[in-house]
Image 1: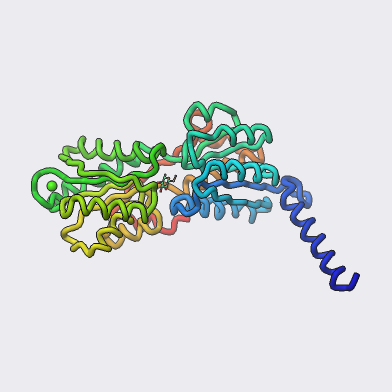
Image 2 (image 1 turned 90 degrees about the vertical axis):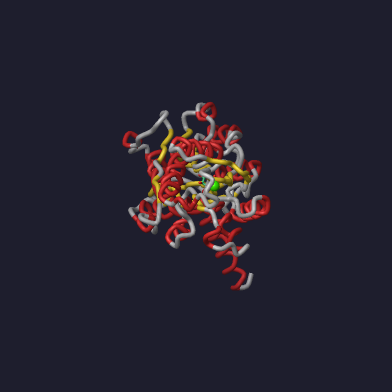
Length: 345
Ligand code: BGC
Ligand code: CA
């Protein structure tokens, strides 16, 4: 063997040892090593991406305090089957905690069985399993937010704007002609947000006329398409657009921008999330309001829970609801306070 080959062989062996170490989970160099597997339904989702980024950033501080941490993030790209395979991979690489953002929130059984067989706890986040599934095993947790609250807050923001600015009722008929852009059917945050926003507007004595709705699966480009169709169907009639998240409301605004609709001929727009792009749109006046979906708070709760599950310490300090769930509150955002929500992480 020539020198180069020997060197290559030594290097390859070194890499293998390193890989073995990084996959073998707990003990490494005397210190316990925390290995977390994060499984996302779709990493092209703006909100999910920011939760995962914040989680990584916040768990990094434990790393600085001497706890070695590795995180593997998986993207199921919208397929539950892919996610199930990714969970198998994460478990066989030695993860001690799983954070799972289900693709299909009604279909977690295979993942639960795998985790239970390996005795690895799961922190579900953002896409809430149904209550019966949460009861399948005591190693299951959920971190999210109150869907109803976000809908009520969106309705209140819209009701306030309509009362303050009578020009929202552009045709002056005493009713607000509106459309809704909805997230994925079956997601706890889609239908519940819509129902609560509309009910809240009605409770606040706003007379409404629903012109149409479109399902845009949380996605900006799909929302622009749906909105363009609705504008074609109801030219110059739409006075209010509600969307179940910021990406979809931004897609709706894109549609009006692409059609060069004059400012005073546009409806008012309300989203939910307060993503970076959403906050910018509030600050530059394109978006009348949004509702903060506390990504940093949710990531923080996930980090605390991860650490407590791994070390076995600190569980008593966590305020659970329904024994194993944590819900973070939403906050209303308008141009008045949007800046306070920027760069929180
Ligand atoms: C967020 C959406 C996101 C969805 C993904 C919702 O809570 O508001 O922006 O697309 O979760 O599951
Ligand atoms: Ca009207």
